Picture 1 (cartoon, rainbow, N blue to C red):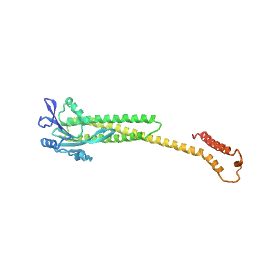
Picture 2 (cartoon, one colour):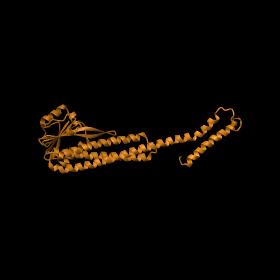
Picture 3 (spheres, rainbow, N blue to C red):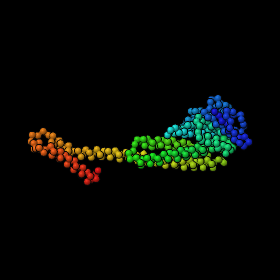
Picture 4 (spheres, rainbow, N blue to C red):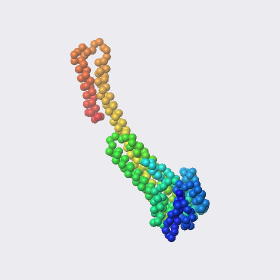
Length: 310
C-alpha cells in the first residue's frame, strides 16, 4: 500500500495508490508495498528505493547516505513481542523536499504522525521526518519508563521472597537484553541527527529543533545506563542471595555431620570384635552405649550453640 500526503488549500490530504492526485505532495508512505508500487514511485519521483538487504545493513555507512540532491536514511524501529524487543528496518529518502518512507510494519510513531499532520501543517518532507523522529523518541522514553517500572517490581519481589528462584534471574536477564536493544536503537537516532546537522541539504532553521532532540536522546541514554546499572546490581544481589542460601544448606549438612561423628565413633568402638569388653557382659551395657552416644551428640550441639555457630 502507498499513501500520498499533499497540501490542498493549506489543508493536509491523503490519497492511497495514486501518485497524480496533486503536485503538492510532501510525503509518500510505502507500507509493505508490492514490486509494482515500488517501480511506480521510483518512476514518478526519479528515486531508487532501498532494497530489503540494504535497509537491514548494520554498517554505519549504510545508515546515512547523502548525495547532491538526496538523503537516504535507514533506521531500526523497535516492536514488542511478548517481553522481547525486535528491530524492524524503516527506510527514509528525502529528495526535492519530498519524504519517501518504506516499511513493512505498522508503527505507533507513524500512526501518531498521521494524527499530528493536520495540527502541525508541515511545509515539506523535512518537517515530516523530524516529526516522525521526535514521535519515535517520545515512544522510546515510554519504553524506558516501562523497563524502569519492571525493574522496580523485580526489586520489590526480591525483597519479599526469602528464597530466590530461577524465574527472577531470567526476568533480570530479559530486561538487560531489552535495555541493550533500546540503547542501541537510541544511539542510531543520535548518529542520524548528528549527520543531519552536518548536512548541506537540510534546512538550517531546523537545527535548533534537532539540537533539542539530541539533548533528549542524551537524557534517554543516561536513563538507560542507570537502568542497566540497577539490573546489574539486582543480578549481583540475586547471586549473593543464592550463595548465602547455598552456604546455609552446606552449613546445616556440616553441623549434622559433626553432631553424628561422636555417636558413630562410639558405635564403631562397640562394634569391634574383641573378646574382653566388660560392658558386653553387663545388663546395662546396651543402654550405657546408647546414653553415651546421646550425650556426645548433645555435648557437640551445646558447644556449637555456645560458640554461636548455630
